[in-house]
Length: 237
Image (cartoon, rainbow, N blue to C red; front, side, top):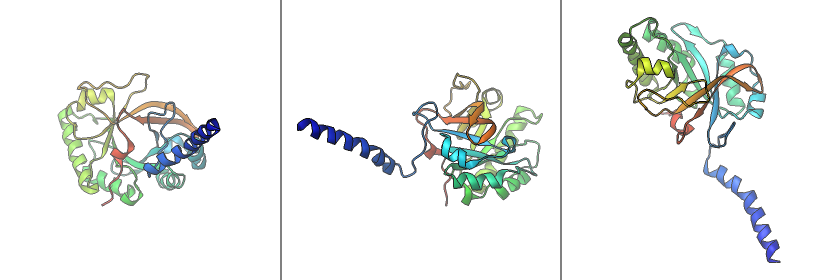
């Protein structure tokens, strides 16, 4: 009889615990792709073509998506409006990013970005994609970048997430953006190692990911170590 009681208790706990854990975390995120220790996500633009969001939401193990909204002072990604609506509908946490052009008018770049990246649509803080100096010397480039980041922070009342890749950071940004959270791109089995050994929040580990519902290659990323999605939640004031 005691054996049956023990078995009943074990089965009861097995059924209850997942539900309890989910209630403790009111926004239960999908926390694994190849491992249950990390939260994974993707970023998308028009380069991925049509996305079948019902399949992405149902079949992938991605918890979040960053969508390209704008580039420079005039370009608006043609898939942004559709993607942000459907990504929300099928349960992903959504953020938006702007591809920064350092030689383009900063105020016009901000105007372009905020015309698309509306606070009410955002779950995650804005992200600025930093990949080119535009031919400027490092000091000139950084001056332009920091002025733009200041404009973005004032507009959204929170610092943006910065995206760049390892070599670009080491050459142009090392030791200069310590106050910002980073997503670092490095497509290898080895985790990025920044020249100043600073911590970073997220790692974009492949540009050739595959996901149900998207026919093209997809950039995939994940949170590092102790970092979590709570750190990049959009604050609605």
